Amino acid sequence: LTSSPRSPGLHVIHIAAEMAPVAKVGGLGDVVTGLGKALQKRGHLVEIILPKYDCMQYERIKDLRALNVVVESYFDGKLYKNKIWVGTVEGLPIYFIEPHHPDKFFWRGQFYGQHDDFRRFSFFSRAALELLLQAGKRPDIIHCHDWQTAFIAPLYWDIYAPKGLNSARICFTCHNFEYQGTAPASELASCGLDVHQLNRSDRMQDNSAHDRVNPIKGAVVFSNIVTTVSPTYAQEVRTAEGGKGLHSTLNFHSKKFIGILNGIDTDAWNPATDSFLKVQYSSNDLQGKEENKMVTRRNLRLSTSDVRQPLVGCITRLVPQKGVHLIRHAIYRTLELGGQFVLLGSSPIEHIQREFEGIANHFQNHDQIRLILKFDECLSRRIYAASDMFIIPSIFEPCGLTQMIAMKYGSIPIARKTGGLNDSVFDIDDDTIPLHFRNGFTFLNPDEQGMNIALERAFNYYRNNPGVWKELVQKDMSIDFSWESSASQYEELYAKSVARARASALAN
Ligand code: ADP
Image (cartoon, rainbow, N blue to C red; front, top):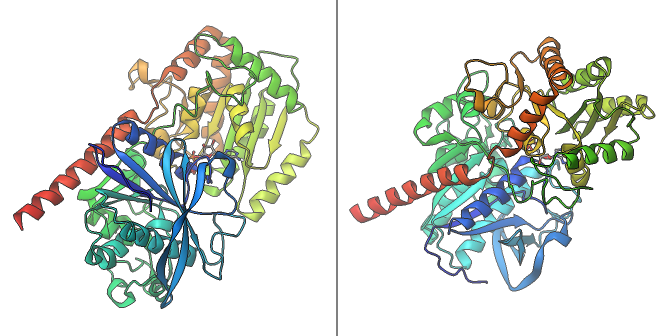
């Protein structure tokens, strides 16, 4: 196995199911890469472990090679061989685990959404820890993410720390409490965890179904540090309405639970260097933004006759969380207001996908509305660059990255005040907020009226105050959404936790 040279900082290993750009479904992928790079820049040794999916973007992995070792890991009472690959993504060293299991866990042409996801990812979590043990790694922090790698926390303390992989503190980040990965308790045994010990109300037992285990709950209970992705969402999930059944667990463990707002990878999301754009631009040169608007409208077969016609963008997974009914409403309302609308999105939920396909077909040859129902990173960048406004009418939003990316590209957010949107979008008419923080349009009630008022205010500013609008665009493009400040908060949490562990080791 490849060795890990010591660096003066901490040794942090992220174990995750996603990483941008090679294996990205949503924000989780962006966070693993963005936080990893920021920590690396601050002098820490950062390594990442991912499943070796067949559907990754292999062309974006540098120096990919198989190691001449086989790591055997336990599952269903047997040992299975795993082939280990290494490579570099965005300058970060990655281990890819390829299980030689007859179920071909990561050879499905898809990242998630398989009937055996619980098995696939509990297998992966165990194999990742086995890799660390056999490689003789002594990380300071093992950072796992979402339910897919939440198994790491109980596996580490129950099985791997006793085996000698005992240098680490466990940090768990939940990117969305909606997805908890619960399963019948007996399924936990496959990866070697003790069902009897763990299916207890103070451990992994689901709070509402007592014959089921909840990986997220397990990670909250067994990790040293638990974070989520914005301060407002951290508050929301501690309430009965927002906690998706886990509020009592989070309140019980509140001392180790904190919300840290995600940053964005400002190397990756920068209109001045974005090679997918027709023309690069910056806040000092907005002519380039106009050219992108022109080109993208032409490519999408939208009318280009009026340069000053506002273009509203929306880039999202089409799931109820994102306020799909309000997105649909915004399409029609934008048309009534004389604007143009571009939606880039896709849905894992069949009836929603079908509904939006219906709308897309309806507007197929329309010159003001375009719906593109697929995942397309290149097009997403062109839409961020082309649009004047960007809607995010989420019902709840743990952090949300699209509002920050939109602002970086000079597209003004129109967002519902919830979760991370509440921590990053501040209404330009809200006198309670210092002027220099105000950067967009917000609304509180997740209904059509709330959305309408915000959209209309945005249109009025755009049309009647072009000077003010331009200043707003320039201001939003200059806001620092980099990982710097968030990474320093993670660094502080890591360092405190490691220091506490060392102090208690000395005391014993
Ligand atoms: P979530 O993680 O809930 O999907 P976030 O706002 O945190 O939402 O992150 C969404 C990320 O995925 C952003 O980088 C956004 O640009 C990207 N994205 C979402 N849908 C698409 C799509 N259809 N095509 C390309 N990129 C998309």
